[in-house]
Length: 389
Ligand SMILES: O=C(O)C[C@H]1C=CC(=O)O1
Ligand SMILES: [Mn+2]
Image 1 (cartoon, rainbow, N blue to C red):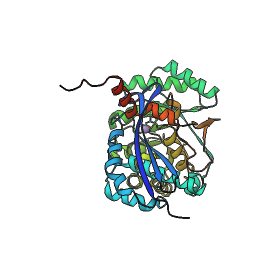
Image 2: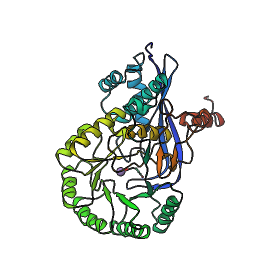
Image 3: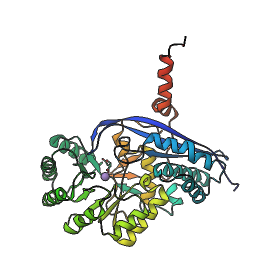
Image 4: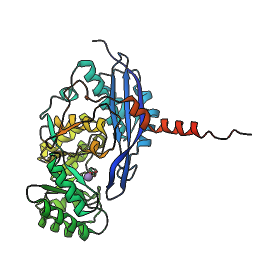
């Protein structure tokens, strides 16, 4: 096989509306901005990746616009002309020219895996060593803010065999009202239905101590990121104090964090995300640390569209252990997407494509419609600026 070189890297901002408002501690989402990354190689193969943040800069410290800038200005010039099939070498170059920017690196690495899969005729999970499972359990986040509406939504999801585990976002507003909301939902849905809560760092340790005791009494199954991400000692004290498992999300990005949190006994479960880790391989490295430390794993989401969610699914399928399943429901939260075929959700699980590469193809018409620069151009053409005197 001749060496395929990286011929171009494109980063496209894509704005997609959500099916309903999605209420989190730090913001309420009405749309998601995806960064779709397309790598073209000298042998004609192409690969896709996605770097998506939640609510601009409100969730994490990397924005879609900043990610595009890092790719266009720093990562692409350093990677053009390099061996597209040597992903480790390409990522070493990326690490050298750019500190941080894990979302950008994740999307580029993913696109290289997708292209390599097309070149070799193999799905990405095979390139990662093989899928330990061909489908992944997927929970749904109830985030309308209204208990009765959430209960109806959950029942409809169970009836449709789409989700049977539900996550509630409870980091905004009055904690007592939020706990009462959780207890109402848990009671209505019964013992068979697992309920998890995500506080998104909103509580201090004293408030978390008071609230988690009540969540535990209400039968909640998992508490995610109750306290600020850098306060690892507080997380460790909560994990030691309560029986209900404590999950780190914002506190854990990569293998280094996974090791440091394990040394501090800070969490029982890690929510891994490919973009936080900086790629599929980096996710597997973090997973290996968790496995060595006896920490359970959960496949997290940045509420990506189909490309990023399927990319995540390939990585999570390759994890030996995934005790808490996943939350890869991002595509279901979007009204539309930029791919030809959206992921398959059936019998409470996301089914992994078995075709070469990621198994996801862009729909050129949808991409043309939703890409931010195209719409700006169209608007500018419709309303041309007045000619200068
Ligand atoms: O986990 C987060 O913090 C963010 C995201 C994941 C699911 C969801 O509803 O929001
Ligand atoms: Mn979370």
